[in-house]
Length: 101
Image 1 (tube, one colour):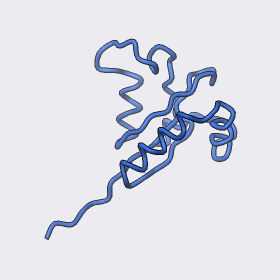
Image 2 (tube, one colour):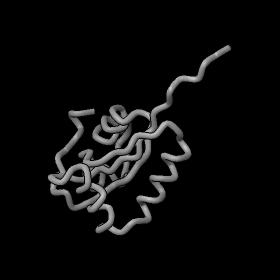
Image 3 (spheres, helix red, strand yellow):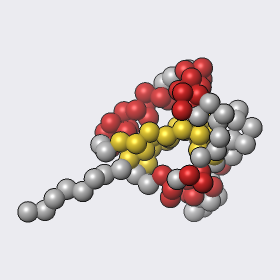
Image 4 (tube, one colour):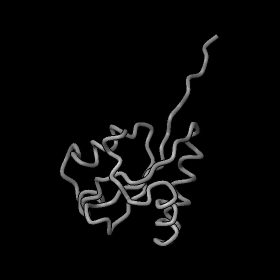
């Protein structure tokens, strides 16, 4: 009988260097996704490239992709103020967390 392994999914928030723009996404590999945002395979006019949102400031870990996607959708519907309160709850100085992943 085959056992199921633990799955890892992340809902995350990126910002730009001046911390004026927020981007919310979901992934199953946060480290690889951060590298992709910084160095996309092909030059695209996507949100993270256009607004230079490469800096991780918040993330949540899930074992179910559906819950992670649901959380991403929930956060995208929040006001900027509510998102800032969430970020401040775990990262009050908005430190860039990229090197900690």
